[in-house]
Length: 136
Image 1: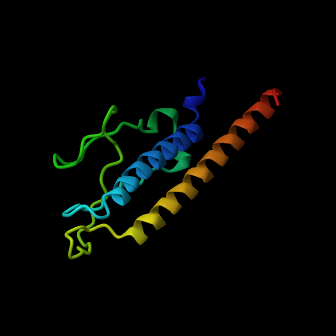
Image 2: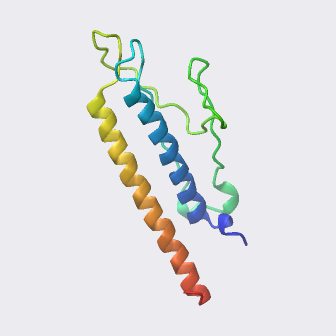
């Protein structure tokens, strides 16, 4: 059995990949805070099935995809599978931009905390397996 067949590792890997992709999207929002007519983007969080019903085959693979033709294509990679989190209401500033810097920085901090928590869980789970195998 490969380590990727263990559901907890697969879910944590998906969460880590989501966090990395979300940080990229949020950094683009911050970088375009003064760009006229730019609208802030975000990603939908992955939804995991009930852990009691999980098998290795039920954990979705992660690929990147564009959800709308107007989205900027990702350079050097596949599109995002997390999908865009479209919100109908956003405030447009007189300059034409709809990026709220404070909201984006809060999202960046939350994403960073999620990434650190998933990394810690992944490391602890690996150490638990090593201990069980007598290799630690």
